[in-house]
Length: 95
Length: 479
Image: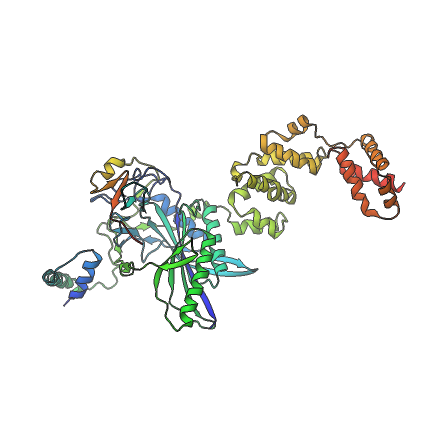
């Protein structure tokens, strides 16, 4: 096994997903299959090769510190499920 | 049991760039909620971040000023967690390759110098703001994403501090440096300079650190001290009772001066960092580092040493004058025009600071008495045109009106009287009116002399040249 049921449960919790018992079984099996497949890459000899963090051979893409137009409050909130004046409205957060 | 406190500090400084770290939205404080947002900082699907070059430049500045080595290959990472103020569900930060590492600052506490290690400095984006807006009928939380994606530098110290005073000294020093560098406005209340403190206790003599608590939400130097002091007490009580300190995040409450547990965020500490594929690596060649180094201002420590060595100022004066870059600049501009270092220092620390304090803590950059005006006035004093006492009157008038000192002296008739004849008449008058004191003086009670000087100065409305007054009084009394 490449991944355990409890690991899947943990990852689901971090992603705020509620999974039923049968879903947990299904996803554990599927994820295990995926990881086993990717595992094949470990057969390659990567000695002395720097880990790849990016797929494109590029660096230093910068933007000058110059303001550009924002999209405006109405456009920003257009798809918000709930709003209050100019704010996004979300369930109360208790700290 | 006796315990030794161990403190490490994490400081988030908000950078003074015009725009956000990954998009062109303005970073101005206080705008209408969500008015400074765009698809990138709102986390809309498909929007791509592009790095603000100034942020990298500012990070290099911070690193060089705190004796760090600059990492030449930088990668941004995603720090994954869910919170309503974080629209993407991850914060773009740096993980294993922070831009600055292995630095240090030297602090002074009770006359002792101590070196505090700086583990790392990394670039990251800020989250938005969760507020409880005062909107009738709305009990929910409200989210303002204007601050989302604002550039931050997180500066992490080694756990090298052993008292609240050391922690404060380190923070003040760091605060002074980022202000000198001009990369942060240093406003603690508005959250431009935020501090988290990691605090743990170990028995005195031990070298094994205890379990730490992380203190958050501290927005003044005073509160940092309070929070740490409270935490020392709290942990000591637990340990004395044979209990165990729990590793947790605690929130400081400025109203009660205590800290309380912020339960529930613990599990989220699994951030699953991975390189952000949307941002390509940042390579910093030697030349770039040297170019930035060449633009660094003289830092407070070097400035202070120079004031003592080259200008001959006392340590105390130097310390006060370099406390802010603006004050030091005001001082230096004045000295350039009137090269008597100690006289200028006395005036800047004295009258100038007093007038600004009384004027609602006005900023030195906004002082109506410019360095040029102050220098002109000091020249009048040096030439003997006005006395030191009159100079204070002239100063207050300059502060109020911004007029040139010569003009004030002329308009108010404040020119110092050095004319011997005129002063002699006043001296004679004073001696004639105070025969008892003259008797005392001649009988050997020389302390009465000051009384005569005071009387003559009053008679001249402060305009008599004190040196001439002294001379004449001595001559007449002895004679």
